[in-house]
Amino acid sequence: MLTYSIAIRTLGTGGDNYRRELESIVRQTVQPERVVVYIAEGYPVPEFRIGREEYVAVAKGMTAQRALPYDEIDSDCILTLDDDVELAPDAAERLLRAMEQYDADCISPDTFGNCLMAPKQKLREALVGLVFPSRRQRKAFRLRRCGAVSYMSRPATGSCHPSDRADGPAQLWRRQRLTGLRPADELWVERDGFAYGEDTVLTHKVPVNGGRLFVLYDHALARHLDSGNSSAAFRKGNRRMYIRTKNSFIIWWRCIYEPAPSALTAAAFIGRSLWNLVIAAGAAVAMRRLSMLTQFFSGLRDGVRFVCSDDYKQIPKYKLQTNKPLINTH
Image (cartoon, rainbow, N blue to C red; front, side, top):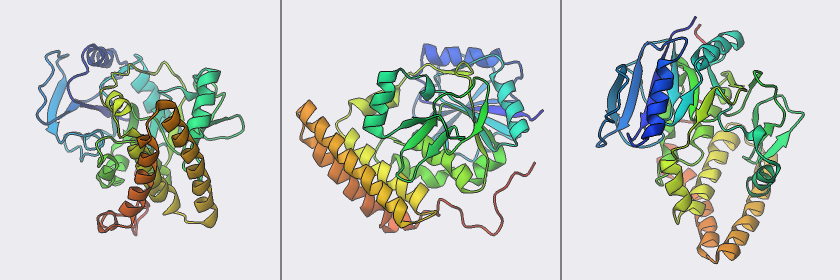
């Protein structure tokens, strides 16, 4: 079986949820070679210890603490975790077996369980984010031309499907694939203080560059305890519409349009933007905050400015320009 180590990103403020995560690691039927915790610089190391974890201070940021060289790890695979994920005892074993079975470069549990949402929540996601369920698609998640996502509505528990993206709290990567995709090139995603869309940016890079990304459907495999320190601050912040609109445009441009430009793809995004304008206007009226509407236009404007800027042009292309395709080396 492939070997693996665990890499956790944290601020050290996860409390009881972090303790539960470490305890679930101890219970794994296949133990990791190392447990490396990448803690943001300036934050104290948590007092609770299970004895095996090693702390490494790195620059603060959801993406910065994931887009690392991982020099401390030489296992075949890296199981990347947020600090609020409780693993089933056989989680690592099942992910490793699925990785070998499907010859995957990255495989993720369906942590957020979109297919399990209540009808009202599914309707809200469809109206607000144009996120639709699908009974016919073969991919776990399909990233559509407009940048919105569709998901399998009724996957069988235990089934494993190829995907265009994956949830971020728990992901098993082949180490060489993760580092070979140059994740540090995507640090732009948190330029405005919150890494909106980070999961999509990092995982969609796998299929765009010829790799194999899969989602394993078992909601109990990795339970997201949702400490929500960063996401809660984002939802309560007064710039969330700006960041969401700006990053959504840049993600569409960088991850979808630029690798395969077409008039149809451009038209799809324009249609989505017009719908998002309606949503922003509705939010401005409902919340009595005109700033929601102005943030929408500012975010779209600044997103366009960024992809036209010299800073953006210095970032290597999302579809990596290389004479040798990034393929499995196993």
